Length: 160
Image (cartoon, rainbow, N blue to C red; front, side, top):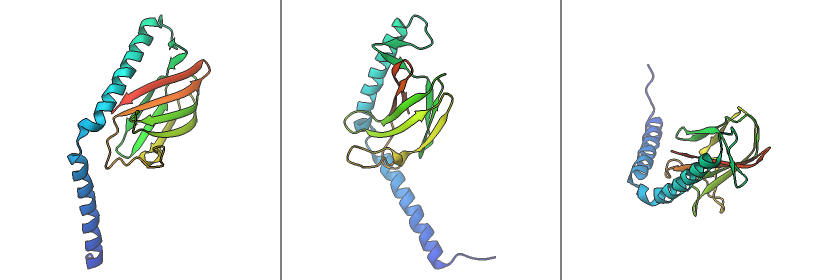
């Protein structure tokens, strides 16, 4: 049986300490500050969805004011976003906006074919100044997806 060398033990100790420090920092963050803007965005998305559902008339592609409600799913694994296009048409110039508002992170995916799933590393989303999203220090609240479709611009949102 082989034991760990002192260097390996020290490396493991510092890795675990860094992981625990990051977890404590996440737990210590005041989630109210970051999530108040997210709650506002969720309210706006809910209001838009409500208006769309009231004026859609049962169409499979609901439109209102030239916006189409995209049908898809989005999940956050802790380090990655898993986005799926559940529509019967492709999304082009697809843009992910995380925590929309003043302090948002964005990523342009390009085209997402009907039924296609895309896995995006959380650090691929960046602010306008180039800062990358760090899932160990920030909480993803809302993911807004916008894309162009054969019938116009579409939008959908997800809360985590």
